[in-house]
Image (cartoon, rainbow, N blue to C red; front, side):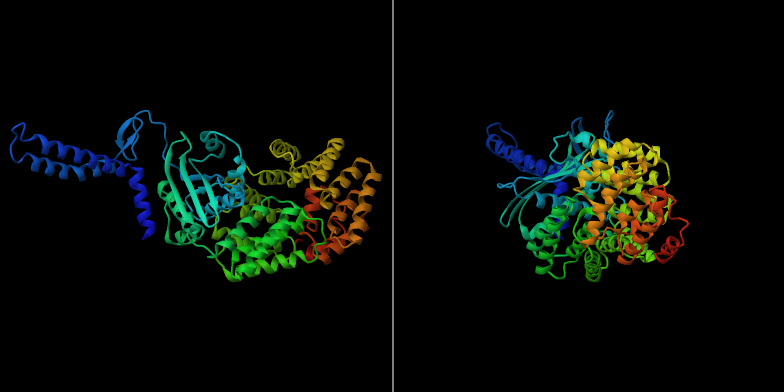
Length: 555
């Protein structure tokens, strides 16, 4: 009921009914006073004041109804929802981007909270099946950039934009939100909320429902429940979770370790908070697939355990199933179960871009190229400015031996994301396959530098060195990785790549066996990696290689 009353009140304001009521009442008061003062002087009939009052009372509902049906526009009074001749404003196509909220707090220390508010609204709206919601990465690409709303709408290909600001002081919140028509920058809806931190979920709900209403998106009861479902009541726990998301999205070793600590702090305060477990699992998995150079023997079991707990607490949570599939994909061999988790995550939230993206990676490993392309393009539609997904589009060409297209795509990504190590790594490998060794070594070195010396990136550089004929440099990297292995790091997968480049089949197989026993990153065990990504048949005919592929279900 409060939500319905709130939405009705907002609609009255949007159609300017409240404005007309105030103006009409003021004018009526003036007219009544004027008639009362002059009717005798002008010798008007005695029933004049009464008639005036009756006419004004009759006119009031007519004015309200007229205003509800006909809305003021820059071209005059037009019927609500109709277009005047020459009107360029198209009907909404149910698409929106939620831009990062501005931090208006006195200390300027609430960036994480502002980002978290916007991200939570994105995640809520993604449950609405007939509403296209641009994912966080693309929507946040305009953060700290002063751009015209029409230009942002054009780049994201959406009809509406939500912007807002947050002023947070202790337990007090002031949140403003504005829904803007992207084509011309006009405001569709706006509201200011002066509440306490305890009301943050109610505010998110009101904003999300207002967007659905004003974009005329249908909302079945099941989707409405998902949109309004929250998993925590304690604002302090929620604050820790938002801060954890903030650091997770930074995608570097220091930030991921900080995120892991924050999720654990949230769990200590609320052991039943499923989202915190899902976030913890995701952050742990990310440290294990290239974002951390520490010994990782305990990372994946902990990631799986956290994901299992999240599912146990809330089996309807998309993020929980995504976390489970993500962890299993790089550490276990039960591929049908992994695919089932991906499909479940997408079923729960079809608008969740990371699920489509990572399911696409799963399909790469399976060598199911057409299905992989479908998922990657779906992810890209939801998150068009994501340089990570754009890079994976390059992978799609790369794995199918369309190297010219892959190289072109990688270079496009580098133009907009020059500091993204992975795209330089991929470019280096593609150039190596094309025997463009000088450029390949240059790109691979860049990947190593940007990643802070990641073993995965070093393996790519060694591969380029080896195939170019600079065996000494390739061996130098091999020796560095061997030292890491001796100190407990899980780098057998990268060492396989190194030995494949050096054409040392027996050493490559030895490291592959160890990587299999350690359950290292599945990407470095799969046939698709060596045959399609590296373009090598060195191991294909080796019985031991075929046995490993059979053991991991990828024969």
